[in-house]
Length: 160
Image (tube, rainbow, N blue to C red; front, side, top):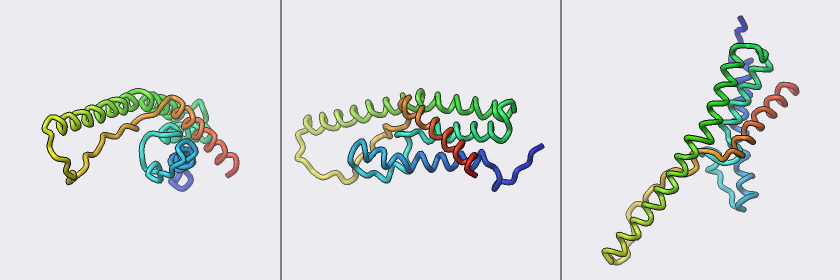
């Protein structure tokens, strides 16, 4: 039985580092794409690369390096990674697309009400919060998130 204390748990630290790296690197990637700095990306869901994919592939890669690819725990980590990455491109992505449609419906309905009643324009006391539209990931974001997790973990393993 291999009992590691938390400080020596390489798969755990590789996964946590991959999440942090993927979240932080979203800011410069978004800046290149939009020419806007958005520090809020560090704590948000969605975007390039997928931190979920980076985390689970780092976990599986770390377990493979420490325990071997023939271990039962590697099988668990690998299947966990596949399910997480599938969910990121499937259910969560569709929820984001539905949020986009719902936000458009709310905007259109609000506009219709304003025109129908012909009320004088007045300031809203509180703005509506829009539903989160970037819940999931495009397949390319999941791919690069997964690649990020594997490459960072291999680098950490071989250089530490």
